[in-house]
Amino acid sequence: RMKEVFPHDLRFFVCCRDPVKRARSQFAMVTSLDGTPEQIKARGKEWLNKTFEDVVLHDIQNMKEDGLIPYWNMETQTIDLDIFHSFIDTKEENDAWLKYLKRIPMDTGSHSLISRGLYALQIKPWIKAYDMEQFCFFKLEDWKKEDGVKRCVQRAFDHLGLPQFEVEDESAKNTRSYEFKEEDVGKMLQRFYEPHNGRLCKILDGEEWKDPWPYNSE
Image 1 (cartoon, one colour):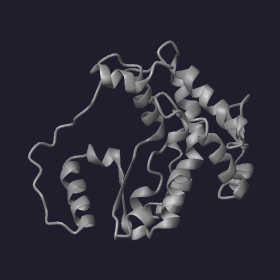
Image 2: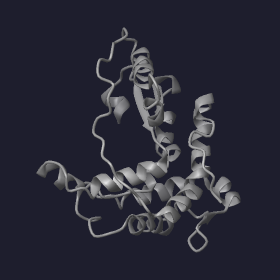
Image 3: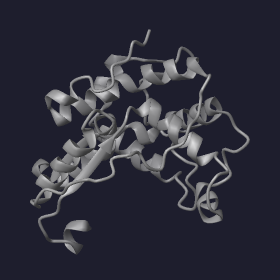
Image 4: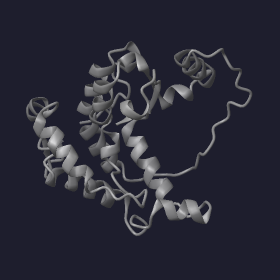
């Protein structure tokens, strides 16, 4: 549909973050009562009386019920890599993904906590419809490095074919402090996401994307 509406030489930007930290950040944002009434309303109230673990397990259960993650063992909380590699990029996976997407409500931000970190699955239809040269991929962590903002902005302007722009204020915006003590959940999510991160690496095939978020999962 976008190609029909915008038959131009489009440029896309994709920014990915360690999916475990991304999930924690989303949960902290959605359950925060700070902000304007409009912001609080948009976040939804579905997670306010739930723990991070509650929401994580609920989303994983939804994906499991829809056939999206047949390789995930709910009891041992581990991935069968043989099933994983035989299932990804199949029609069955695509059908299961479309089935899962029907669950997502459009009137709240309290949804798909874990599936949002399946980056390769989400970008696949985009890179199928457009040339890879039209995309510029970032890791959020690169923005936080020394001179990271300057280098990333330079890449963005180069991608758009625009002259360089000097960023005067490189301080972080829209940030909040939060702590998570549920380390067992974090380790479980690392096991869940590790092969998915590897899948993303194969798609992007760049030095900076080799093991972008190294885990020491057991």
